[in-house]
Image (cartoon, rainbow, N blue to C red; front, side, top):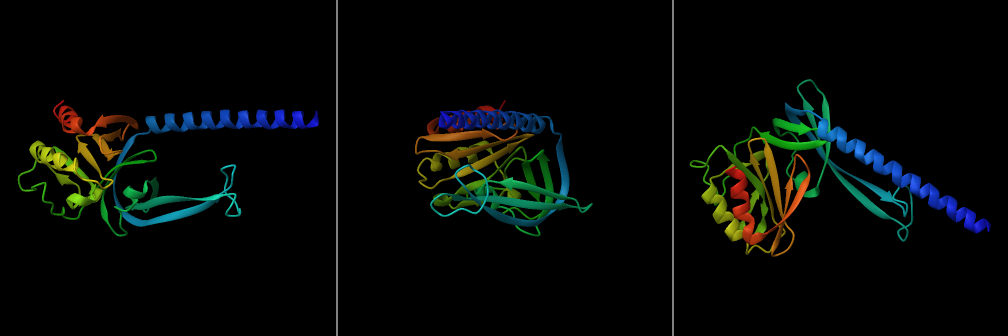
Length: 226
């Protein structure tokens, strides 16, 4: 009988914890959605990682290797002219794009980086001719087999026909490629999920769409021409 009571108590506590976590998550999402979009001149102070050891209850602490795992976080810290520090947690592939000492214009909303426009000169790329490309669209990302590796702080201008050729070649790229397009105030990221499917993430809203790779160019073209 005592065992049953203890079990019920633990289940009840677990349900309360889940409900509290749900409400906290909703509150954070609401704050993020309502946060103003800020644009400020910054310098990259540092790009660093933090590793925490998590136990079976998903809390940090000292545990043995059989009962826990390591959780690694990737962070970049900017410093404004007023010496204010801005720190963001990023995905690993985004974290690699930032280097200590880089300067530029940072656009962010709440805890999300929307863009970082470096003052450095853009890098050369075989797909996108900077002398002829439009100022309307910009692209960055990585596709190893196409030798395409453009950091976000050196995003390239492009024309629609250049993008078409790039996406056509992506269909045969077996690496885990991704690329991000900036158009006006919108930022869409495209990431390979499988040989046939791509995941589109609208950065501002966090909305995710699956897209068949053979429909990718038509889908993006429709957005850019809207």
